Image 1 (spheres, rainbow, N blue to C red):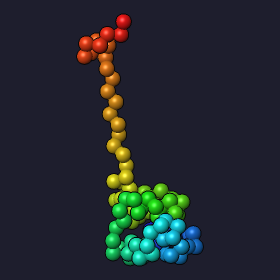
Image 2: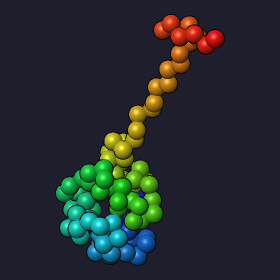
Image 3: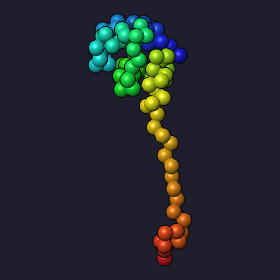
Image 4: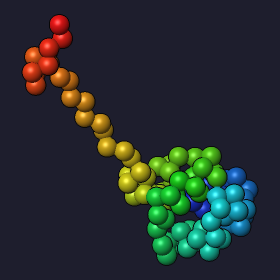
Amino acid sequence: MLTLREARQQRRMSQQALADRARVARVTVSQIELGKSGPRPHIARRLAEALEMEPGEITEFREAAESMRLPTPQIFALLEGERGVSRH
């Protein structure tokens, strides 16, 4: 797992280049890297995609990544004869 700064620097990107690619303000990147604010889930996704990573791979995005997960769908099977449905 990498911090946002480490991931950005590994890709030799400036804060401005990352911000432009992710369509966010440079100050947003700076605030996240400095730990002054946490990203909203949609911002975390944009930044991760701009870095060609998954949000869960970036330390600061761990909490946002959890809220991006969809609940496991519940599948209910109707049994023959249930609810008065006949299959004849």
